[in-house]
Length: 254
Image (cartoon, rainbow, N blue to C red):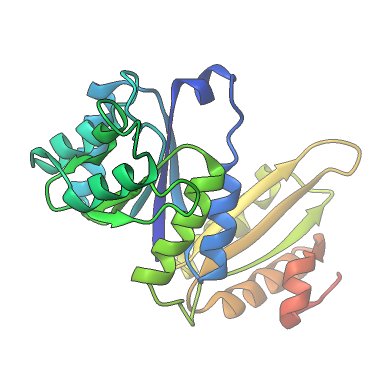
């Protein structure tokens, strides 16, 4: 199962803030046997946000979104999510009650706006300040603050998803003394023989130059990886199996 991730905020694109969401969501998804399928870092641009959200909702994708759900004029995500889902923005009574309880003397007139959510939204509890996020169409909207969004994302996974007991597997090796161009016939053969798997080739330049080759997939990865090693041995290329592949019982050095 793959998830998308949208990180929303001009401050990320300008460099005023450093993103920490990508690495965190990648790691937590892997713990559940899932993977991060794609990432978008988007500005606080309503037209662009609506367009991107419409696209991912129409595709039925599962998406985490961090940022832009506050009450200030530069926060557009709640409104854009409603437009993308083609529903009105309405006052969510439970969200409003939580905000008024948390801020009894300052909820109105500004903070209460964070309870205006796309109609039909479900709430995502916020363990830091009790101002909830929300979900609609398998899109999970949370604040941009990592100390809020990360436990909220973990709650979503616990609440709505069972861990995958058969996650994707990745096996790779490093080929030394060869270029991608020289390896092309083997890469093309592997692509033809194992079309259900994702073959990757990652060259690294420097004092210890090598090309990292490997497969990612759910079934047949070990067989494909063995076939790759045999092709490299037959062509007399020198390679070393990557450490993670060694821990999976595929240690080899040739």
